[in-house]
Length: 285
Ligand code: KIV
Image (cartoon, rainbow, N blue to C red):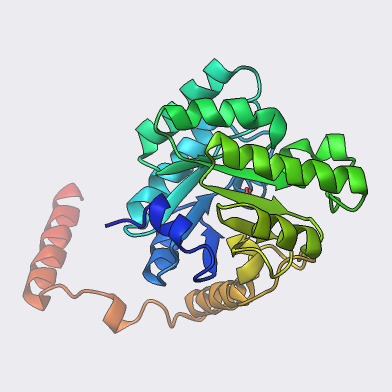
């Protein structure tokens, strides 16, 4: 049985919630086998899987493609799929239709969308259709142009007050959980105390109910760059480079493939094949 949103909500105040992004079948299977309760198919896939400079070019079809693969790989985790830029902002009707398509075609259990108070009616409409919604406030990457870059939000009184209102509005709208991205840890802690649904932090300090990280940051799959809010828990990129180099060297020096990697033909059959070939050559002459 997959983890349910009720189980995630019940973790608030009793155990720290771990969430990781995954974007394909094999990584989702590994993350799932590690017992991670919640996987996010984030639109960060645009940057780490598709090589875009931001999340803005990601389409609903991209998310559907990757979420379907994650659903095949993860058998137990609750899978949340991100709604891409411009799939929920134009109208509530379009948002509901797109959230429904995402859930119906992939089997994901929840969707995530960015925005607080301004998105509360949209969140409520999606939730009313039976589609669980995870909110996402603070520094919301789809609005990085409006923020003037990827900057910590909530450092001024006005901005902190707005983020508190955003969290409250999302809870009232029925969001089952809220991502707090790049906000000061005291503000994240305050919001976590004030609202009844779990907060999931990324760059929001240790006092959230849970944490989410981008898999590629954690595993060292993104070159040298590491955002301040992330930590390398593995050097898989370096391990892949070493393995690829070893493979290339083994092909070049002839040690791969060896007898164990190859199958053999019955010597008598080989002799017959060679003899038949010789006969054919003689006839041609
Ligand atoms: O797209 C993503 O990976 C996200 C997380 C950073 C929360 O939204």
